[in-house]
Image (cartoon, rainbow, N blue to C red; front, side, top):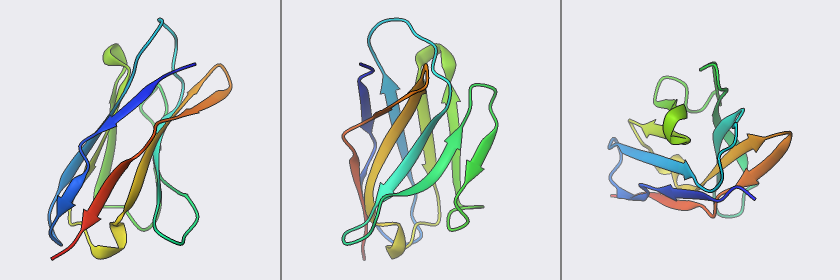
Length: 115
């Protein structure tokens, strides 16, 4: 098991920013890709962004130019900087990590964009 703990969610006004963090804890291991998914009410979970252990990134079209994913390999932590947030970004955001071909999920953190 690879416990993942997300933090940084909350309530923000449209146009605002939030920074999510996800830390993997436990035994020493090598994490390959890390990333973020989100699930809005009544919708399927969707990819937001991923980053591999070399720093290559991928983004959903809906967040390109607004969100930035980064990671600190020494801390086994991935971050998601979210700028210019809109109502459509409201969702539960889940962290994911790939270790030895297996995928592990965090419990999620709520992001609500509301005026």
